[in-house]
Amino acid sequence: MTIFINGAYNLTEHGEATSGGGAWIQENSNRNLSIRINDTLASKDSGELTTILESSYQITSGTQITFIIQSPTILKNLTINLASQESRGWINTQDKTLYKAIVAELRLRGSPTLLRTYNPRETKQKNLAKILAQEGLQKQQNPENHPQPIPELDISGICLAGATQALLYKGIQEQRKTAPRRKTLCLLDRSRYAAKQLSGKTMTDAELWKSIRQRSHLPKGIRNFLWKNLHDAFKIGEYWRNIPTLEHQGYCNLRPNCLGEETMEHILLECQVSSATNLWKIAKTLWLKKDPKWPEIIYGIILACNTADFQARGKTQPGKNRLFAIIISETAYLIWKIRCERVFQGDKPLEAIHSKKALENRWLQCINTCLKLDQLQANHSKYGKKAMKESLVMDTWSGILMDEENLPKNWIWQSSVLVGIDPH
Ligand SMILES: [Zn+2]
Image (tube, rainbow, N blue to C red; front, side, top):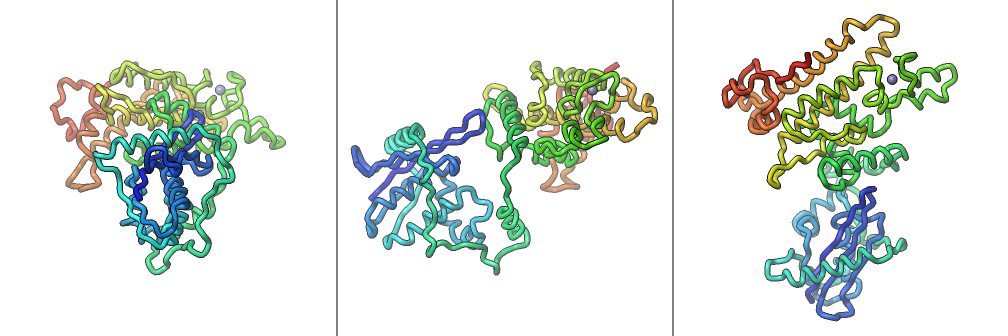
């Protein structure tokens, strides 16, 4: 018997995911299925996985089934990668409960089960299964429906003989997973809203976390800074509110000129007395040389700065996206560092190093350092395969360099290249 499977997945702007699955056997068959997956299991592949499982339940054991599926990931995990996945205990695999339940069920069937992806002649069946999956999405979810592997056939744990230390560590981390804090969820939502503005796509929490971990775009200090921001992990503002005798530390340290509570938003964007507004102005001036659109900088845009997707003629522009992430994150991080210097210097005067001109020069120096590092990292003879692509470095910085028209075409090996902006 041949069963055509397809899935549907939807992510709302609040990050709520829903999944559905469809199984088409033949016209008007009472064994065609249209399923809404329990929302706690919703993912891109869970619709197809659950439908494979439910279809298998209703076909008599002993009947050979051929499943035609859409997702190449599912095909690999259930065929060529099955042995290695089982010896790894399915660690770090999304939908692992569903995979384990399917493997247990198919082993119980007592007849061979074939699995392959659609071929071009099966577009009609694929679409019919897709329609059933879309219908499934519209149904009410059944919170009771939580497929679990049959206990006797559930191979659990890792095969120790082949386990590496890194794999065991991942296993421990997976066991320790705790529910995210309410504040983190709220910040993820703000970040998601901004990411939609910057990329046109609604992103999952996992995609947002991944965006701030990308090594090629953001240096370690900045990745940490953004990570802590998303976790609301800085001891500022509200943190001091309930600590007797230290409540005053929760207010902007530029009082009496500024009376605001010192939230991260206040430090980075709202404080009118600090240098923040001025630094964002120069950041904008530099960016406008690259692109005429400069979004209103809100806190979410800083958190989601690495999700931008600027397009030209329908094509994404990796260099421009990267420059946007660099400018936004470097500016925010510098404003934070300046604030910390002020707090930790206490009463010592900082006028000389915190004068408007000195801070503008420092900002410029930060951006120029990023440019220099990019040039150095593009050195293939030194870094081999790990070297950054020359074309990416050129795409990132072209258009904003000083005296660019007089630079050689391949300016990457010139040591004196600087970003072309003079704030004075
Ligand atoms: Zn302030």
